[in-house]
Image (cartoon, protein in one colour):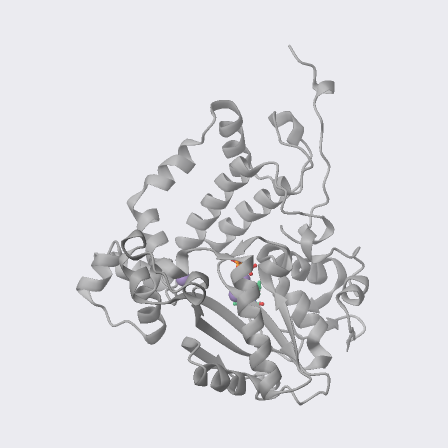
Length: 378
Ligand code: TTP
Ligand code: MN
Ligand code: MN
Ligand code: MN
């Protein structure tokens, strides 16, 4: 019989942006289970429930030790009844029935596969499932009209679902830097997203581009895209121009959602395969059928351009994690009466914008201790 005194008890603040969350997750079994339920909730259109599971998982990610007993969780924030039940089941039985049956369910599996196609969101996947499409073969055969992004996604499904390594991200960074330097000398390129947080792999590679002279960044994306296209590096791209000044429904800095209005490009790069660039040897049959055909691998790349005056906000907003960002905005709104976006920070009481040229200044405006990117892995 163990007494409660023998257990480590934990204490964590309730907003993820008040916590340091490294990649060293001591509770991966529990957080994987909660993340799967979050995925499932989001895939079935229940965003609120998805966020609840993500917040619960994030609390466990911030703990310094593995949880061994449910009593250790007393008093922790964001652990609702449902999440606690799942955690308890895993601690007691080694698995949660709900998680296991979700994982096996036809609907979950189909939604996972179909939304795994680049350009396919939850609504599209749901429509296809109701039309009887369950997998990629079904998608190819029954041929619903696929848009350009989805065609590209289906064509390179395996490549795009294989995690991008840091080495590949570095190779892409070199290419993007060369492109940016050629079309706009003096412009700066920064690696953002998961790789800036120190993740060893990612589902894509994200870059933020700016120019030290305000205004010189305008129209940079189309120029970079032309350069990349002339080098034969782009397989797919969709460019969106900056629409920040056109906002009508919400004034600048007071966005209604997390969507920002920067000039950007969602793309697929053709990254030359390392071994193919070196020795002329190919491995032929040892590789998959596709590997033998093309000397490159498809990698998703996001390019975002920000005016230098908004750079700190863009950097903070695009470094993630998604939950960390969401929590920052919730903190700003609920605790500080401020509105934070990837463009600006607005103080609703003072009725003015708060300037910042670094992430540190933004945390200070928000009354938060600075959390470096490597500790934003909530
Ligand atoms: P992602 O690239 O989706 O996520 P990630 O880099 O954290 O993880 P992964 O390794 O799987 O790629 O998004 C990066 C950040 O960009 C994330 O914090 C959310 C932000 N973002 C926006 O602010 N606006 C957008 O429109 C999109 C698509 C992302
Ligand atoms: Mn998708
Ligand atoms: Mn990313
Ligand atoms: Mn991205």
